[in-house]
Image (cartoon, rainbow, N blue to C red; front, side, top):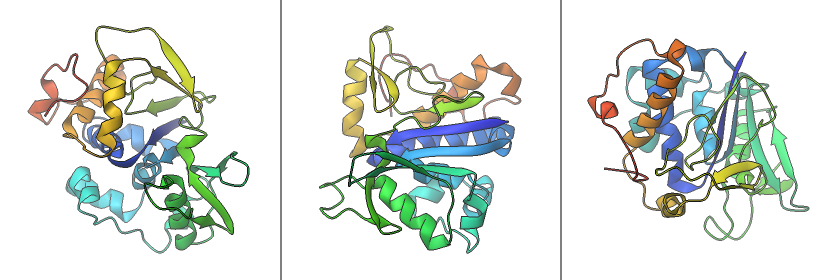
Length: 243
């Protein structure tokens, strides 16, 4: 069974995952349909939640996932916690001891929403008092685990940073130096440093769409139809993002 991991991405870097998911929806929907589990950390947990079989996901297939999310029209149904339990895995960082906690069982819709809020909370940037989940305070899950389920097989990893991942930006010229941080491998490059600023000033999501197309081309068994968006055919080289 296929698993999809959406690594951590603070702030607007979550737009990267939106572009990836939109590409998979249009070009290889069977990947998302067959995913038995979806993992997310930080703002990536919101996109992981959108991937689940909620009404929000069904609506995005008819329209456009990017517009659906950025226009704040995602509505979780009352049974969203039942749909997510056992399938959606959210990374949290416990304030008390700084340990990572993965949660995948939710007792109510509000329980699920609170877990997502905790996973996205960046201290100072989001506020000074961390939110709580079941009486325990947590902050951004990416602080302790940017790459949930890295030890599992049959998993597709997604990240807005270049590194040893399945779907991510491809910087050039190739730089082979990387470092491990928060359970994730990230390449050392000027482009990756620039991407930090995109957490506040996001570029077009079509670049993220392209990266998923490149992944599908490398794994042609999933590539079933021509690209619907002409922009995705253009070759993207050295620049981290291009309008």
